[in-house]
Image (cartoon, rainbow, N blue to C red; front, side):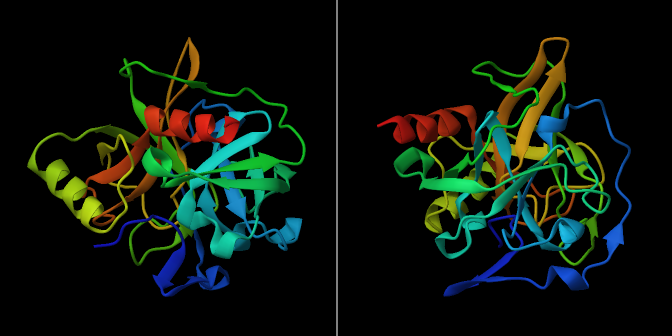
Length: 248
């Protein structure tokens, strides 16, 4: 089973995969999500002309100068850069920011890390929603189309639904045994032929309506990338736990 949907191979040390060798593939049609729903984690050394080559995770903008991502997306503790608002990473870098501080969570927030940007993002920031979603949940990211597939230039927008029952219980039990369980996990299943996959870790789970952009979680990992494979996601409670730890 693989856990984190990050473009990393973990065998003792964390090694970044050779993303340059993965060809671009088309992505599904975009929706009206605001630009702040598209957050890429990239190598700080990458030139603007090669952002797509060096993007390896996604993120979640929770304040103009704060991004949350999955902890394994922080390679050897090194601070990445963050790109916000570029739905197509092959066409342009969007709003790119450096990271001036990295704060890894613990206890309930152990699977999340907060990144403090060196300058704020001037875009709509989603609201952390403590309520059950009333509409469609959507995950965003530039991860692979399948475990052995290619990555899209344009961000994926994947509809999800809650996945109760035995499949979720087995996923949670396996994550707990691997020491990869957040404090308040969610199990979600795709409602399309695509799933979150390698490279999607750290991305937000949203609901978008007339009330604006509502944040419901963060992509972590799962047992696979097939449409029938449920995924494990951090909840709003886990995000709030991370932010409160940073205030301590």
